[in-house]
Structure formats: C-alpha cells, structure tokens
Image (cartoon, rainbow, N blue to C red):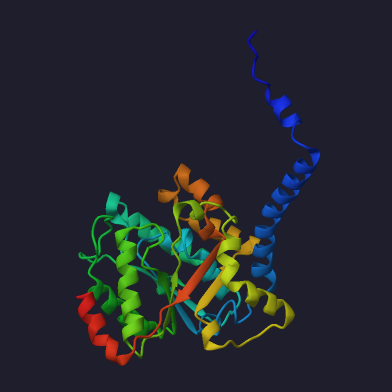
Length: 307
C-alpha cells in the first residue's frame, strides 16, 4: 500500500516544543540586536570620539566628494547628517564630479541636487555638480584621476576644507566613476602632507548591502569595545589608533531627512529606489576608514603607480 507524505502540520508537529522555544528566542535576539545597536549608535554613544573621530566631528569644513547627483543621499547621508547635526559650527560642502548626464538629464539632475543639498543642510553655493568634458557620467569609463585630484585640491583651498569623505576603492556599487573618484581623492590625501584628513565609505558585498540593519552587528564588531567603553566613560578625545575608523548611524529623524533629500531627485526615484531607501544599509549607517598618510619615501612610487 502506498504511503502519502505527511503534511507540513504533521512534520512541524513532531518538532519538540523545546526546539521551538529556542528557535523563537534566537529569532527575537537576531531581530533585536541590530535595532538596539542602531539606537545606541544614533542616540547614545554616536558622539563619542572613539566611534566618531574628532577629525570629523570637530572639523570646520567637511567636504563630501561624489561622482553623480543623488550619491549624497544613496550612500553618504548618515555621514553628512551625523556630523552636521552634531556640530552646528561645521560647514558642509558637496563636490559632485559630473551632472549625471548619461541619459541626457544633466541639467535637471543638477537642479535636483541643489534641492537635495538644501534638505541635507548644505548651502547651495557649496553644492556643485561639474560638467567637465572628461568627467561625463559613464559606468564603462575610468575618469582622469589627475584631473579629479586637481579639482579637489582647488575646492579644498577655496572652501578651507579640513575633512573629506568619499568612496573607497570598491565605489560602494562598483561603478567605475565612483572608483576613479576614490583613487584620486585617496592619492591626494595620502601623498600630500598639506591635504586634509580623508575618510572612505566601506564597500560591502551585495548580500550585506541590502539587509537593512541586519549587517550592523557584523559591521560593529571592530567597534564593540569602543561602544562598551563609551557607555562606561564617554570620551571627547581618542588615541590615534582609535581614530582610523568611524561608525555613524542615522536617528529616525535623520533617516526621514534622508528620504526627504532623495525625494528632491524625482528623475531618479524609480520603483527599485523605493526599496533601496528601506533595505540599503547605506541609508541607515556608514562605516568609514581613514586614508593613511604615505611615508615621504613612498610618495614617488605611489605617484608613478597612479600614472
């Protein structure tokens, strides 16, 4: 006689209640830990010097360098708002290397950028999208890094910048324009003693990128003792060894500001971007790494490698 497979209710009914209880507890912990970490970083310990280094929090002029209009919302808003909202004496600036004219929307996107900067608390006069013939939006073209470095140097001098935030070598999304910006800014910050301190935004795998807060416990591991220390005894200064990393989390209010800023880019607000603004870790928190200065003896080699 044929035996029919047990239905799901029968299968699950055979699982011991004790196993169900443990599964339930583990699930609750897995859901609560990221939320608790976000709350701690956003509301309680986020200003501690061991978590948000003084080079950023005490800067007078913070420059964000990106490739396209809307990058400031999609990737950098926790850093922008986390620094500017905590210190009202800091003046923000945004330097965008192109108008994002890949689909012929450059003029419109430039205007949208101005509205986005206004929503993020950056003055329109310090919010610029360039339209250089060698720096046109194209995911298949590696931009001229020497040109980018020259432009960044000019604006650092013009705006008296003392801290920079930009992409890391992965460019967050892997876009070649993003990577070129990273290469240029990182070389400028590493090879020039007079350059301001620069931090780069960490690129993660695609899976980690779209886990909402799920990636925060893994990201926060290098900061674990710092978070515990900040809860025990807050600090306004940090050892140089502790100032090479930064972790900045959005409060609920800053997250809503991020959404409002991106809403100023209606030409880019497609259906998938609605999902992105909820699921992407980059609208909830940023982890940054400082660009280390090169030894003087290494600078000629680095310059030759870039060329």
